[in-house]
Image (cartoon, rainbow, N blue to C red; front, side, top):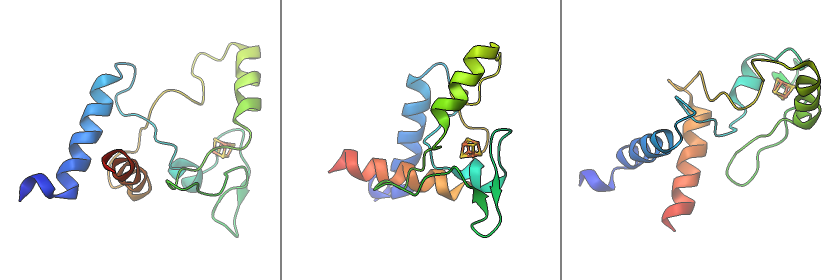
Length: 112
Ligand code: SF4
């Protein structure tokens, strides 16, 4: 039945989360995807892992945080950065299996 289809539930959760938070076109779920595609200006690429060396290991929901995010935020506050690194949402929502995976895991946790 369509109601039981994980993809439909995932799409609905995705829509609900994005609609409820008016500040984001698409919410960041901290999948770490962007830090495995290329390092930001504060990052350092680690070729052997194909990711930034400051990216943490996945937690139980496969979320991966930036280990230096507090330092980055402090630097950006000091300089009055008009476009901060964190908090602007996700710009890579399509075909992003890492982000979809985190959403699926959160969905499972909510539905328990
Ligand atoms: S410094 Fe942090 S936010 Fe930037 S690429 Fe590395 S892990 Fe990602």
